[in-house]
Each structure stands twice: as C-alpha cells, then as structure tokens.
Amino acid sequence: MHPFSKDKLAVAVLTGNHPYDVPNFHALFRSFPDVDPYIQTLEDFVHDWGRVQEAYDVIVFYNMHGPKPGQDTGWFGQPLRGTIRRLTQTGQGLIMMHHAVLAFLEWEEWAAILGMEDREFSYHMEQQFSIEIAENHPITESLNPWSMTDETYNMRPVNGDSTILLRTQHPQSMETPAWARQHEQARVVCTVLGHDNSAWADQGFRCLLHRSIQWAGGSL
Image 1 (tube, helix red, strand yellow):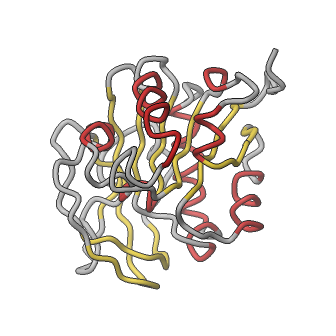
Image 2 (cartoon, one colour):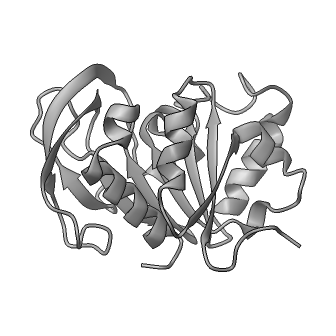
C-alpha cells in the first residue's frame, strides 16, 4: 500500500547534481492544493525503497546529471536506464523543468523524451522577458501573456512533433520556452523556465507549472 492521497495528484519531484533554494522550492509545490509533492533525489527515486515508483501520477525532473547514465551516476547508471524506459510505458506524466532539459546531454533516450535533437546551449542569468501564448492547449487555456525574470537558455527549436505552448522574442532565449508532447505512453511537458524563486514566485509561471502537472497527470 502506498501513502498517497486519493484526492490529490501524487507527484515525485526529482533533484540532483544542481543546487537550489530548498525552502522556496518546497513552498512552490506545496502551494498547489491538488498536488501531493514528494521531493527527492533522482537516486532515491530510482532505488525506490518503498516500492511506490509506479504509484506516482506525475514525475517532475529538476535534475542536471550528465553526460549520460554510467559516467557520473555511479552505481545506479543501469537501474536509471531501466527506470526511464519503464516510465515511458506506464502512462505516468513526465515534466522536464529548467535544467532537466540540459541533463544527460549525450543520452539519446533523454533527448527523445524532450523532443530535441540538438541541445547545444548558452545561458543568461536574471533576464527580463515577455511570454506569449503560442497554441491552443488545455495547459494554456487560462493563461494570459505575462512578463517575468528568469535564467534563459538559448537553444535550437524543438522537434515538429511537439505542441508549442509559449513563445518569447527575447534575443538571449530560445523562442519556445515551453512545449508539450506525447512520447510513447507518456504525456510530457518541457519548459526551460523555473531557475529560482524569481520565477517560482511569478504567477504566470506558477499557473504554467500547476496546469502542466494537471495535464500530465490526466486531471485536466
């Protein structure tokens, strides 16, 4: 038996290999009334001591391991590969948040989930930029254009089989900072937004993340 609430989405939030503001990160996920967040390292999730891995509705990746399993992931390189392959088949939702888009830069399976063939990037701290709504999608239905401050990634566009959720014209950001897609049996949402509390406290970003969790978890 798992301890998860029947009335909330059980969400595993996976961290590792990148520092973050712990109190404000926890506060972000605890602020969503229909989300039951379990913040943990990627290693703990892969080990799955409590045997609850497949009971999560959504898995949010906020890790930055690399370049591929086995090179800086120590003992759990092979279990990690198996875990990721299973997650694409179980129907659980996957969200790739901010630096998770840059994790495992040499791992083709990770790139396939993201829908990105080329992840060469540059980054720019504390940029102010405007966000536009790109395409009609359940995630963007209640979103309005907004401006925010965040770290930006300048990268090539995503593959054509993704639904673009947001666009920006900022010269130091990729044009499409959020997109959704289906990868095998998994609903996937990817966003390069969400570096720190400057973004986490932003109402537009919070709405994007909340609705992404709902959509990936099948409740939207």
